Image 1: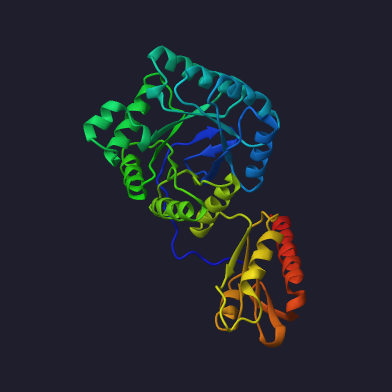
Image 2 (image 1 turned 30 degrees about the vertical axis):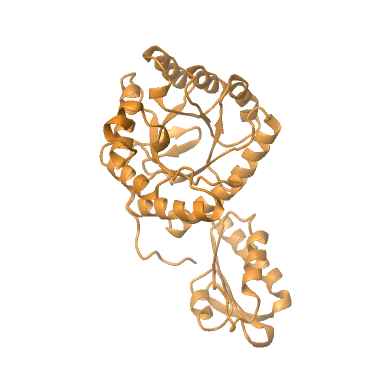
Length: 366
C-alpha cells in the first residue's frame, strides 16, 4: 500500500547514456551518487568505503585520481566493488587515460583544463576504447579566466557558457557519450544555471550544490536546490555534497527522491514529532526502527504516530502502522486495517517482524 502522489513530475526528456551498468537520462530512474574521501592509494580503505556507500543505495561512486599512483590503484579497486566508478580528473590528461584503462566507467573532467587539442583527442580515444562516458563538470569556483573576466563574477550565464564551450570541445572530437553539471555553492545560482542549461542541451544533467557544508546545512541547501529542480523535471542523476561521511550523502539523496516519489527503496517512515499526547516514546522508537529496518530494500511504508489524533488516518494509508494508545495499549495496523493491540514493550519487535514479513510478500509477488 502506498499513498497516491498528489502530482506526478514530468521529467525533461534527455538522451540516455551508460555509466557502466547504470543508465543515466532518457526514461531511466534518477540515480544517486557519492564520492569517496579516503586516499585512493589506500586501496583497502577505498574499497571498504565504496562498498559501504553502495550498500546504502548509491548507484554510482566517484573516486579522486589526483596523481599516477591513485589512477593506477583504480584497477585493483574496481575488481572488488560492484558499482560503476567515476574517476575524478583535473588538469592532467594522462590520469584520465590511466583511469579509463583501469576500468573506470566514467571520467569527470573539464575538457578546457586538460590541455591541448591533441591531449583531449587522446582522452576521448581512451574513453571510446574502454567504453567510458564523460561528465563535463563546471564549477563556479573554477571558471575559465576569460569567462570570469567577461561576466566579472560567477553567474548562471557564465556557468552555462563554460558548459557549452566544453561540450563543443568533445563534440568536435565526435564524442557525445556525456553528461553535464553546473555546480555552485550558492543555491539560487545553481538553480538558475541548471534551468538555463536544460533549455540549451538534451544531454543528461548531473545535479548538485557543491561545497554545501556540514550535515544539517548541507542537507537543507541540497534539498532546496535539488528539490526545486527535480520538481521542475530537471535532473537525471544527483550527488549531495556534505562535509560528512559519504554514506550520509546517499541517505539524503535517497530521501529527497523518495519524498518526491521519484524513487522507491527501503522503508519510508511517516512519524509525528511527538507531544504530551504520545502513548509511547515516538522519537526514540523511530530512531530504533530506522536502524533495525535499514537492511530492507523493498519499498514499504510505515507510520509511527504517538496518539489517535492523526494515527488512524496515517495508518490507513501505509503498509504497516502503529498508533499510541492509553496505558501502553497501542494499535497495530496492517495494510491500513486495525490488526490488534500490542504493548509498548513488545511493539518494536512486532513492528520489525511485520515490516519484514510485508517486504518478503512484496518481493515474492514480483
